Length: 125
Image 1: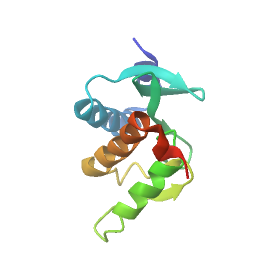
Image 2: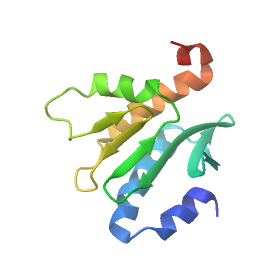
Image 3: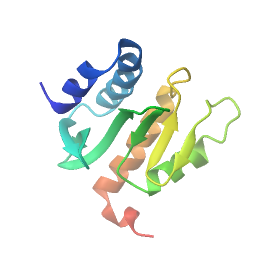
């Protein structure tokens, strides 16, 4: 069992379902991801680079795409009034377990991060 699986097993069932769903959508979008760690967090990796981590904190669930650019890209695309209330910060996207991310938002996070991994020049400002 890898680090993401271990982390999921440690969560309360309600939180586990929400966090596991994010990881399931990522794995469906990008089947060749692997489990690992980055910055001490259980994460999925792609081509040896950290792709995404999802962690339950006391106040929210945080998605960490290991990029300062990805949250900004996703924030621009989620200005839709129908989108759930998301909080964006440098390197983090936060949401409440009761209002999980739409699958298309998760796929947008993955697509933006994969683009950076495949073309590191995108990370440069």
